[in-house]
Amino acid sequence: MANIIVINKHEPEECEAIFKAADEAMKEGLHPKLHGLMSYCSCPFGEHASWTVVDAPSAEEALTYLWPLEREHSRAVEVESMQIQ
Image (cartoon, rainbow, N blue to C red; front, side, top):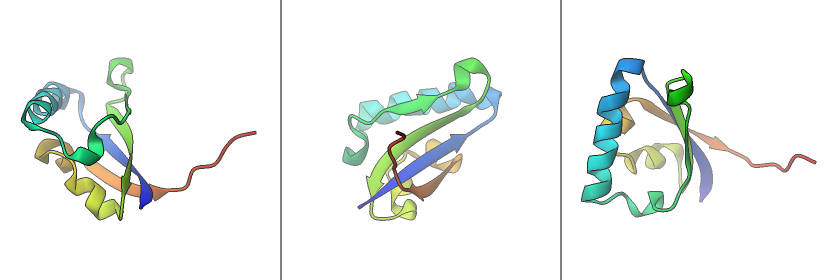
């Protein structure tokens, strides 16, 4: 498994639809790999984006964990973690 960061960027007018789709996806059942993860959202501060680190075999597979509207606005990149000392 690799650490994949899923980056979602969207326009301000798309926020409501994206959050509504997220609520629906949570009611229907999220992909098990997404349960308990932290997602960082900057929408309330003017940058319409979110970032989530997912364990997946590949960036392409990480995108399949998302619900359709989220996937439409996202890209996934394999990352390496490092500790800042």
